[in-house]
Amino acid sequence: MSAESGIRTFRDSNGLWEEYDIKEVATPEAFSRNPAHVLDFYNKRRTQVQDSSPNKGHLALVALEDRYHVQVVTQNIDDLHERAGSTNVIHLHGEIMKSRSTRHPELVYEIEGGELNLGDICEKGSQLRPHIVWFGEMVPMIEIAAEHVASCDILIVIGTSLEVYPAASLVGYAQAEARKFLVDPKVSDAPPVENLEIIEKKAGDGVPELVTRLLETE
Image 1 (cartoon, one colour):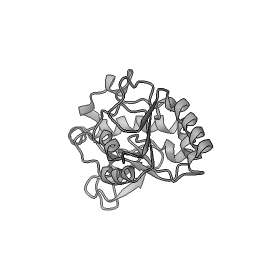
Image 2 (cartoon, one colour; image 1 turned 30 degrees about the vertical axis):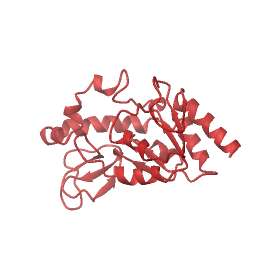
Image 3 (tube, one colour; image 1 turned 90 degrees about the vertical axis):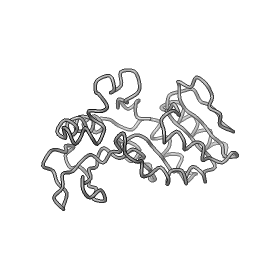
Image 4 (tube, rainbow, N blue to C red; image 1 turned 60 degrees about the vertical axis):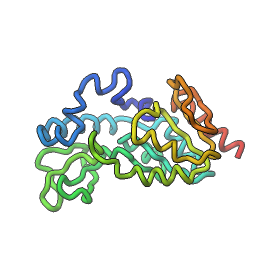
């Protein structure tokens, strides 16, 4: 969803995996071994997010709120949905613009100035870490997201291979009668999902077209 805003992904060609060993920047063990390296990695990613803007796909979902109750569930850790104007956003993998305490995870803070460094501590004296779900950690919002999918009338899946779990499992919670749309230019085979329409376009093109259809025909 955010690739068209210039935010690099991990998995696509020229993605971050080609530059970084994921085990050295996005795991609890990496943070324990070399917290400064991990913090520097996310500081660079945070700068990239700050320099990016919502694209036409983000803005189209905001327009959909004029007629529908829209619940955004995203694997992205940026804040582009919020900056575009979406009012209901669940971040499955965390939020890069926030930090949380290493010992008191209920303590979550906005990051002022864009950097998080060694020595930045919570109100109880513990080092702060990125408010990100690292590989090997639980995805705390997945059950809440599943409840939303299970009750939806329309499900729009954007820019995903449907191969990354647990997020990919969410499609299976949708009711058979719910209308389902998959917007992605790289769909090779239709997944075995009932009542599914595939739109083989990038988010910046496919989502606005779909939103226009939904607003004009419903």
